[in-house]
Image (cartoon, rainbow, N blue to C red; front, side, top):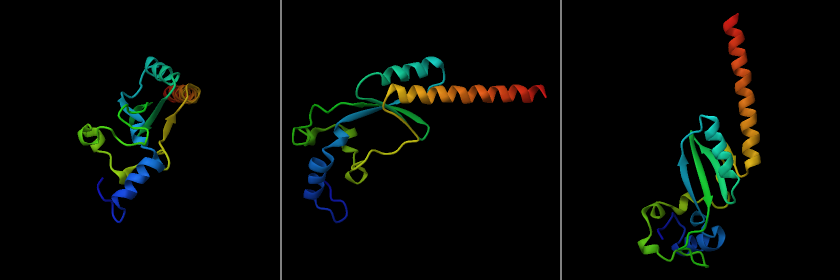
Length: 139
């Protein structure tokens, strides 16, 4: 591991192995097209009906998170293929580790119910906005 300021390599490895438990090796994220149509929102609701799935928005980009342990992660939270790991893994920096807590996102859904409640409110707001615009256009 690379040194980070005054933190030793051993401290970084201990932090990853024991404190964080290699959190970055326990999920993947995929960028999704932003939902625009009813079918898109319905599909997100369907994704969230499955275990180990979250949907979040970072900036303006929608993401699907799949919590699933890397098959090369050992029981002691070390990488079995560390020297030959993919580039995406090499890009993770200990300084940017999300331990001890998950990053906060403006929108983050862990369950279908959370998402469906948000979506229903969003549809209601849009409906009210359309009515106001229609009334303003008539006036």
